[in-house]
Length: 221
Image (cartoon, rainbow, N blue to C red; front, side, top):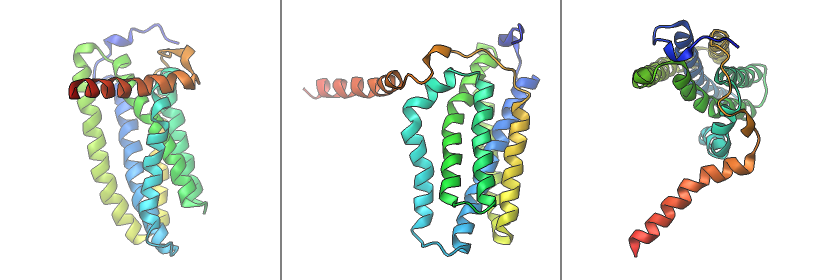
């Protein structure tokens, strides 16, 4: 661990740029992969219902993992969490390239994406000053939108030409995200003691829902 005061890091620092590049390449890879798999399903004569099911599989991982990924992200160094998540994405894309079931590979990518989200936003507060946090979030959102647009165009164009080439571009994008992750400082975990306390994760996730449910019932009377 470094004794550097991370609260003094500016938006143009190497750690912040590494986070933004990692986010851009990771989101770019996600969108290229979606178009590549959709083309792959059509190429392999999967039934028409398989395409919406594929996207449901991806979204379902977010829903199922939502009670846990935030607290698990706090249990690790955020940079390490981002790297582990991108490793899952990289492996998921790689096994699809080598002929594994696309639903299995995309499910792994979904797990990586679900775990990646709280880590990428949580690290901003640890890498920059409070007064720059809004700008840092703006940069994160801008890089995400740019990656979605560019990834969608690139993925759609490449998938029409050659599905395997689209998968290669996706794998390279995840590889570049992993390389950027290595430049992110290994910060202390925010709450290292809470790892795998699944009961506490569930309680903290559902507590606001119960609270607002009670408030709604009180207001209706």
